[in-house]
Amino acid sequence: KAGVTQTPRYLIKTRGQQVTLSCSPISGHRSVSWYQQTPGQGLQFLFEYFSETQRNKGNFPGRFSGRQFSNSRSEMNVSTLELGDSALYLCASRLGGQGQETQYFGPGTRLLVL
Amino acid sequence: AQSVTQPDIHITVSEGASLELRCNYSYGATPYLFWYVQSPGQGLQLLLKYFSGDTLVQGIKGFEAEFKRSQSSFNLRKPSVHWSDAAEYFCAVATNNAGNMLTFGGGTRLMVKP
Image (cartoon, rainbow over all chains, first blue to last red):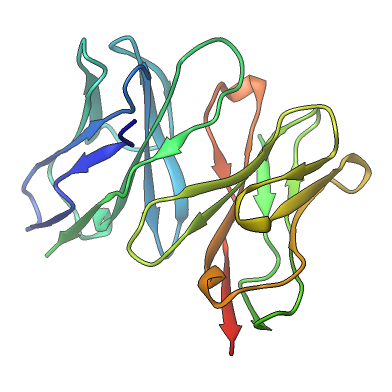
């Protein structure tokens, strides 16, 4: 079974632009979560989507948004990019049932904001 | 709110030596605990997890971890380290209050001397 895939793997943008990142979960997984990884703040939870609905949201400004499609693929969007948005963005998928489940991570998208 | 502390930012061990990476969590009830490993430029790979039951859990690549409620710890161990184990290791906790949101420790970077 294929793992979590993320596109693009690398991205360079300039301040003020917007960016869209894509995540395809493991086949059969219905939940997708997004995390931001930076040297200063470490790994931080952005949001989780399940059946096209946002289930949980981390402490990030409204410039960070996401959505999930009926095939469980997810996108996250960052508008009005700031230098501090430079980070590795990781997507994780899980089955989406009740209770705790293991999250499986993709390779990430590395975003550089100039 | 839950939190995770990994006291050691860097650890260097000789190949063939034993390894213990420390992880302490803060949460009132029983947490769900995970160890992930990240190689440079890669996503996170699950090493092992603890949900309930036997407090000593076995993972992939010869790793094991022990959940100690009295010490709020979930330390990762390996009896004999291989050069390929050099990577960054993250401890994470999830709680029922926060759904499947993972809270990560700051990570421990492991270097292996030949």
